[in-house]
Length: 235
Image (cartoon, rainbow, N blue to C red; front, side, top):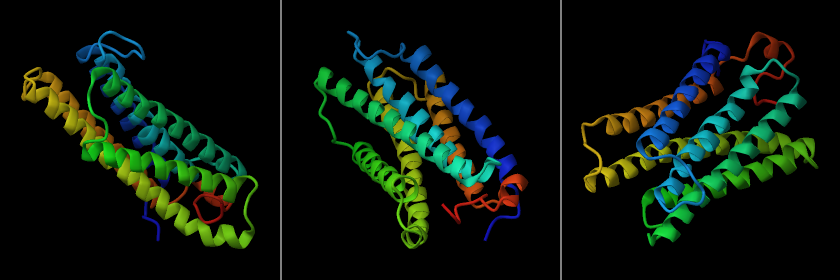
């Protein structure tokens, strides 16, 4: 049962909120944390790549991939390709973002995979990759039989939304973890501008994810509904 609201205004709001979230995390990484670099004497610059790419990839671009089915007034096959490509880009950015965190830890002598955030993060990227591969071979190329696709579709949708919720929740956990470290080391005032910026970035990220999920439960755009491909009912 769809909500009594069209997807279009929700997706417009999601685009605005997602853009704000990206601006906030970039401002944090560049203005407060010194910038981004893959190779640097200051290893914190390597780590800064992690929150930027994870937010841009798994949360924002991954969210765009989800809402594309409801928001775009295009034919089913075109939307399938857009959905697949956007999720693929999100997956690659997520892998690079996680690699940056490992690189920072390894070069700084910090242990890996000791926190709940890191455990959930590894689980999310593995599940995201498996979901993408299954979607590729079942719904796109070489493609499963009609019966296989019909039986798989509800699970594909539910599994994808679950992984996205995990990713969004883990992003908030990551912001909390990093901010706690910074505050504990005395480098950030608990009531200072940077602390508020990080908290607002996390809130904006969660708001974007909520708008993505609401768009899934909304009614497709008029053009998409007219061609019968405005939702996930036939992939």
